[in-house]
Length: 304
Image (tube, rainbow, N blue to C red):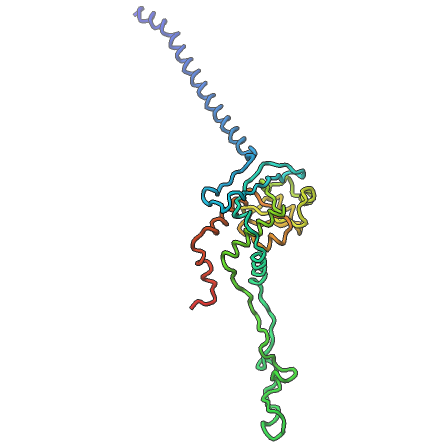
């Protein structure tokens, strides 16, 4: 029994050593896990706040090869969080969208189409049946020597009805061919870029909702006098909505509503990076689709 107690006394320091070592290892592992978690959080936050790369390469070149490889366009990415201009990088634009041959005739057809397809004429004239009076025959058919008439509301009489006059409502709707609509967008974007009226910004986040900030920014950047700001989403941040609400010459528009008439109505076109990628993706898809004939089939006049 004494021998067993002596052995247990000699083993007790070792047991305490192993226990302390085990707790120390557990503490080290916990600290390591906490450090890894904090490091991952810091890395994630830095990744979110990191600026874009110097040159944003073209993302659609692998899917849609451009017709002219030497016609690539590059535009500076500008900031919008400060009045002073600062270059954040360069973005490459697809030449089939932003370097197309400008067709002024197609642009004019798009403008006429957009002005007329939603126009309804309410000009209206009354026929001889709608004018009040004239129910009695003015004189007998024969015996008077006068010309025969059946009503004083005939178009031949003063105060009578109108023959072949305008009837309301009259719509002026017609559908422009599919590829002319697509070509109108590419031609207008190319003209805006060639005239240095197209600018690319990182996002639409501004520091405050004061309209004076937007006015100073437009004056400093030589934008305007009218500016169209386009983003991919149709819900814009609160600050830019408040700032542009009092400025009639600054308008906001989502990318899916971009049209030829609005781009030509405004002197300066400002696109975000997401809007540029979205517009390129959609227009390149439309330019290379094989079922374009089916897009205009419901609008043909002869449906028989």
